[in-house]
Length: 146
Image (cartoon, rainbow, N blue to C red; front, side, top):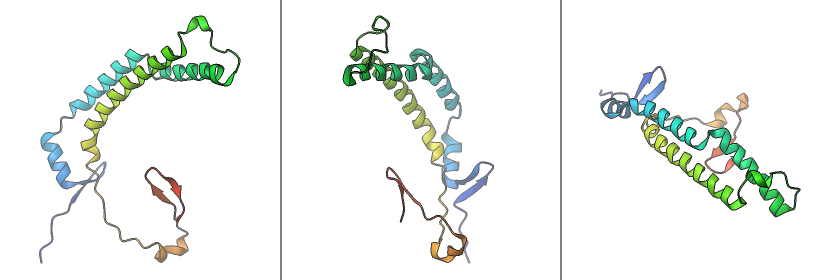
């Protein structure tokens, strides 16, 4: 009888796909993760940090509430440019941050590819007395009950 080799490896950080692990060991440069930290730090410093983007969103919201909803003025006009200039500046900061994060995502993707998907022949009806929660999670749909 021939038993095929396991398609996964047990590691201190969970079971991983054996082929993906072998491939990454031969080609993945872990120092790129540290480079990403440096790039993220530089990007955040350039845009004034995450707190700055948050403050910009709040400022833009207050300006929009005044302009669109007729709320009283809460942002001093001498402290800001026009609403569209504020929005464009915020868009630029968001784009810069997204670009940095997308580059990071590309370097993290191979590590996510280590996921090993165990085949489980689970039959919910066999375990009714355990009162298993039958909530189904669908990507993009939120929670749905079967």
